[in-house]
Amino acid sequence: MFLTLCVCVCVCVVQCDGQYIPLPSLQGIAVLNIPSYAGGTNFWGGTKEDDIFCAPSFDDKILEVVAVFGSMQMAVSRVIKLQHHRIAQCRTVKITILGDEGVPIQVDGEAWIQPPGVIKIQHKNRAQMLTRDRAFENTLKSWEDKLKYDKGPLRPHLYPQQSVDLATEEEATLVQMCARAAEELITRICEAAKTNGLLEQELAHAVNAASHAINKTHPKFPESLTRNTAIEVASTVKALYNETESLLLGRVSLLDPPEEEQLSGALQTAELELGKLGEIPWLYHILQPNDEE
Image (cartoon, rainbow, N blue to C red; front, side, top):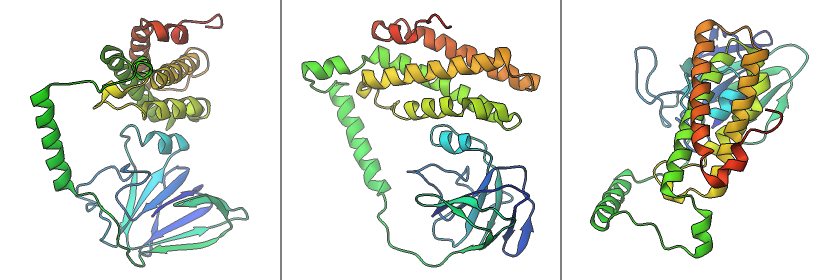
C-alpha cells in the first residue's frame, strides 16, 4: 500500500501510535507498508537500519510515514535520489482532517477528495505475492556475462529500417551524458524549490517532462536507444534548460548565493552536453537556437 495525503499543517493533525507528531512546512504525507512504490522507487530513502529508524520491511507490520514537499518531488523520485524527510515509524497512524474543506487522498489508485474527519491506518493482514528469485537472476546474469565475454559485444541482427531507427553507440553515449547532466540540474532545482516556491510553480512541467524522457534511457543497454527517445530527451532537456535560464536571468532573486551558484553550475553543464548533442546531424534541427532565443 502507498497512501499519499495532500495536507496543510494547519488543517491536519497526525498521531503515530497515539503520539502527536509536529509537522514541518509541507504539502502532504505518505504512509507506506512496503519498501517501495511505483515499480521500485524507495520513497523512504534507504534500506538499512540507523540510530533512529529500523530497516523498512514488508512483513514487520510497521508503517513508514514520510513528508512530501511538493509534486515535483513525487515526479522525479523515480529518476534521481532525493533527500527524504522521514517523520516516523509506527503501527498505527491517525490523521484528523480539520476545517470545512476536504483534502486530496490517494491509495494505490485514483485520488479523491476526503471530507473532514478521522482516518486510522493500521496493519490488517497479508496476501501471498510473487517475488523475484535473486539467486536465479544472479546465475542468469553470470551466464550472460560469460556468453558476452566469449563472443564479444554484438549488435542484434536488424532489418534496414530498424538500423536507421537506432542511435549508434557514440550517439547513445552522448545522449546518456546529457541525461546525467539533466538529472543533476533537476536535483538542484528540487533542492532550491524547497525555499523558493516560484521554481516549482514555473518549472514543474518542464521537470516532469524531462524526467519522463530520461526514464526511458537504459545506461546498461545503449545499443537499444532509439532515435525517437534521443529526440525526446534532447527536446525536453533543452526546454528545461531554457526555462531555468530565463528564471535565473530575470525572475528569481530570492535564492541564496550557494543555491544560485550550484544551480548555475548545473545549468552550464547541461548547456555543454546539449552543445555536444547538437553536433549529431539528426538532432541539430532540435537543438539549434530559434529566433526567440
